[in-house]
Length: 209
Image (cartoon, rainbow, N blue to C red):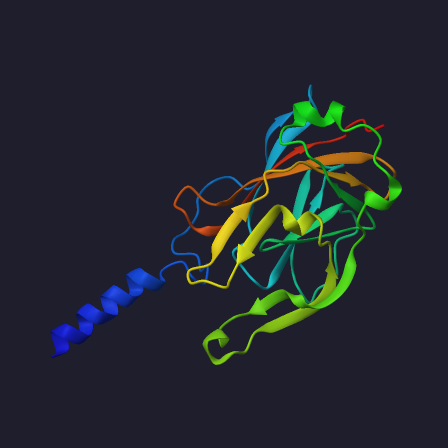
């Protein structure tokens, strides 16, 4: 009987593995700004966003990433931030383009002012505790959230395990200082298929009409 119980537990571990996006092993890759190409103003940002209790603040101007607890103040200089798959900006506005590559940015043309999306205050988007999810209890943090930039990854929780779909689009951000950046979420998993590791390609600054 004991052997049967152990077998069932082992099977359940295999079935539910990854549903809650918990890190399964230590990630050893370099984090922060990587593959920087100053000639083309491009690069890649790699973030371990597996911790539900942290924001990762990205400063495109100085190429720095600062992680803080969700209940701590933001750093002095930052342009956008990542919490798991959620995002917010520092007084910026976001536009989802039809482009799927930075080479297509020149074809975007003039972006109407009303097409840019500002952050909005939310009380039910920023999940910080899922330990009681099976009892129907999820704890959220109150914070700003950009629905446009956060749409770079759709997480459909109507099925188990959830279905993750990358938009593949290039997002244009008009930063608070009037400059523009282009972002594209390339992946949301590590090489070991652990969810929550965000790979973001960027181009900054970028010229927009």
